[in-house]
Structures are given as structure tokens and as C-alpha cells.
Amino acid sequence: MVVGDVFKALADPTRRALLDELQERSGQTLYELVTRLITRHGSTSSRQAVSQHLDVLERAGLVRTRREGRYKFHDLDTSPLRAITDRWRLDPEPPPPGANP
Image 1 (tube, rainbow, N blue to C red):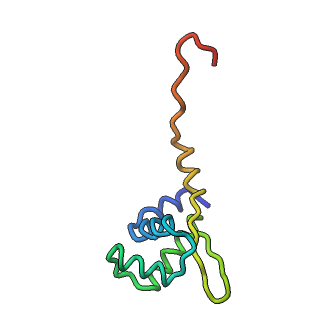
Image 2: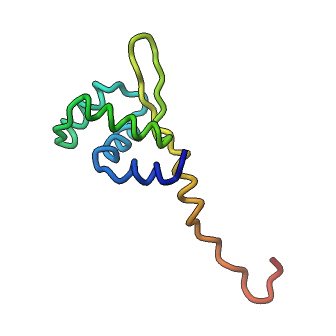
Image 3: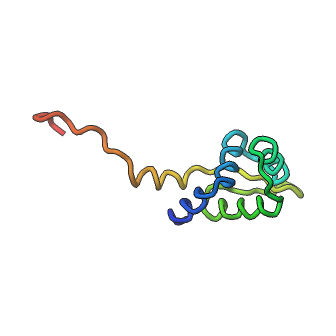
């Protein structure tokens, strides 16, 4: 996982909507995600386009896929976001003058 891949993945509004849907309910199939994008976000993306978006999210490490029989389920993985938040994490407030660190 490269941090730049995470930024690229997050740059697209359809991919952010997919992450929102997986945050709400992880473990969805492509069909379920396409249906939710259409009904909840007014998306006009085809199944193929959504599949390509999921591939970008998977390459960035934000989505994990698993097969069960003939179904492929998509799960949210927020661990790549930690590298971003750790990079710009604010240090706790400095101790007051004269305090032992």
C-alpha cells in the first residue's frame, strides 16, 4: 500500500460513496453496492464502472474482498487511513513550563 494510492482512491466521489456504503454495512456484493449507489446517491455508474472503482479501492488497501461460493463480498478496511492520520497527527499539548516531561 502506498499513501499516494490512498489519496488517489479517495479523490473520486463514487469511490467515497462506496466507502460510505461499506462503512454503514460491510460485506456487500457488487450487485448490492450498485443498487445502493443508484438508490441512495443517484449514481448512473454501470456494474463494470463500480467494479473498476472497487479495484482501485482494493489496490489502495481500503477494500478487502472475499469469496464465498460464487459470491464475492467487499469489506471496508480503514487501516491505510492510519498512515495518513499518523503523518499529520497533532502532538499533545506541550507540558507547562517547569513541568517534568
